[in-house]
Amino acid sequence: MTPETMDCNELVELVTEYLEHALDPAVRARFEAHLSECDGCENYVEQFRTTIQTLGRVTADRLDPDFRQRLLDTFRGWQPDQR
View 1 (spheres, one colour):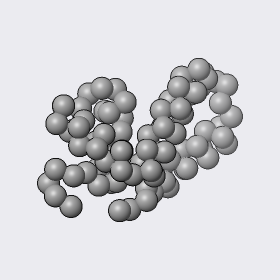
View 2 (spheres, rainbow, N blue to C red):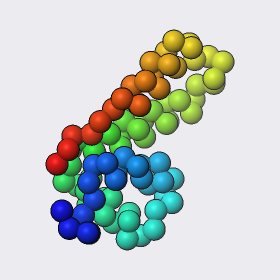
View 3 (tube, rainbow, N blue to C red):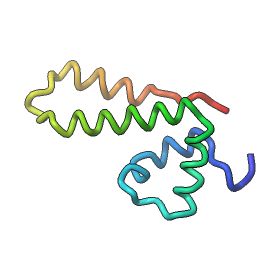
């Protein structure tokens, strides 16, 4: 891996900033280059985006506490495919 490339772990750390359009252009370019080559990370970002959109429509009082905990556990335990 060269200094210009991004690995899956770095992408996971930056996904929120990416979706909020808060990455500087050089980092965003590295992020998108990795996405174009890594199906696992592409799926992760799309699932993250979909989850944010879906949960944005659900109020906290409507979420079953057990479901909320399972959802949090799933995100905490997720590991991207390593390249």
